[in-house]
Image (cartoon, rainbow, N blue to C red):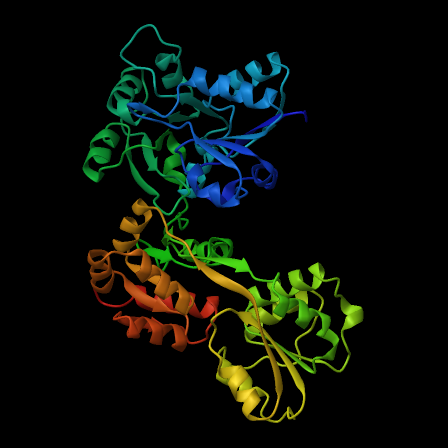
Length: 506
């Protein structure tokens, strides 16, 4: 039996991009992942497809699994020789009971590696522009839990002492007792007009904050409707916030955008949209599946060096070509220096360069017709052409080249397979502001997973942003109104279109 290991991974303060590189690597290795509710669900995209996922999260009034059961499960999995990721919000040793889990694992003889994370005690104030220390004002900060009732005498927090410290006071898990905490601090001597802040969903696209005084913070939080998860900051440093643009500010602030492309490809689009302030819902309706085991592909790979022109119509096609070449033992020695490689768009050209091949022709427009235009001056009669593409793709390139006398090998290297998203994701997507479509297959597969009532909601609901004219036509043929279309059929063009969609009148 192999030696098991448990990684206690700090997921960071909420934004999935703030997990450490070491934490990301450990999560990608794990065979079993135990996760909780505080933003860690967004990191499930990093998990390998065959990993077992176990929700052990706790919420007010609910626990998916008790702490003792969670610890016992970690011990059992480690003893079985499994590679386990225990994913915890913030840092595993800051009010996360990570130390208790580590002790139990060590006592059981299980290897443990702690991967520190950014605690919300620092991350959330920073995202809100609040410095927890400031020269000449606060040279230290204190972090306490707000779970304990400040009205009780028997508790570990000495609120009288905390009130006297000239430090910044940060309270985690204290929203339910905010009024009592503020009253206790004022009673013990903290000035009623001292600055105070509450930050909900810090570092995420849902971040909201309220800045007030110690005397008014509880009323202001109630007025604004802030709730958990949130942290509280008490101290003069709150008044020193330099007016940074917190999370969620930008041209897409307050907008919810749906990404329908394959999960493996969604990260770049999602990251760019979130950086502009959007809340992103990933609803992948397709999955990219190689079809490189077919006799057709084997024949194309055997003749790889005989093709005069090789045409790639997407980065997925490049990835599939690279995989097919590797599987059939084809490398640079099988290529000819006079072969012409054509890539639709710079993203496809970049992907091609990634497997060691520079594109000779990159059309200005990212559609099949543009490939034919780009090759208009290239003699093709009697020449052999390989088109490496998706199954069921438009035959416009192959038909056009055959008309000119080319010998075309039109080879399917991959296909897009329909994926059905969870029902709760579908419901959330239909309530979104904008939905993006990156291909015709994302349009058709989205409609395929919806029942008639949901299709009606889609038609009347989110604004549709399309990556290009072919995708737009598919959407219109299906009865959808396309509000905006990318000027260039690539991800930067789609992002620009989403920004235009956000500016449309409601």
